[in-house]
Image (cartoon, rainbow, N blue to C red; front, side):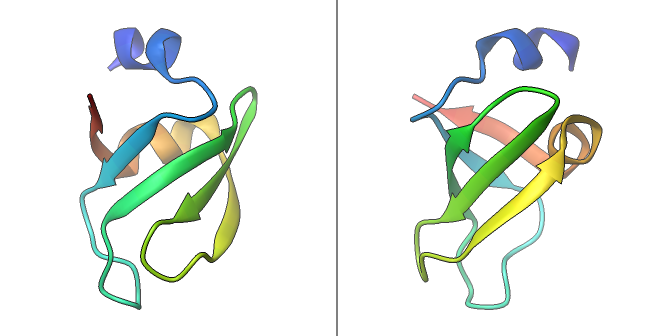
Length: 63
């Protein structure tokens, strides 16, 4: 999982293991660092999560 950390950058799209409440599972990275700000592509909701939580909850980057 550590290799995924170095490749995640703002503008990337991630797929989560669990669906968001709106039913979407794709997230766009708005900010990457110690914390990640990500936006749901379905409803537009933005959330701030720490790096460890993002890496644990994401399946894979897209593209």
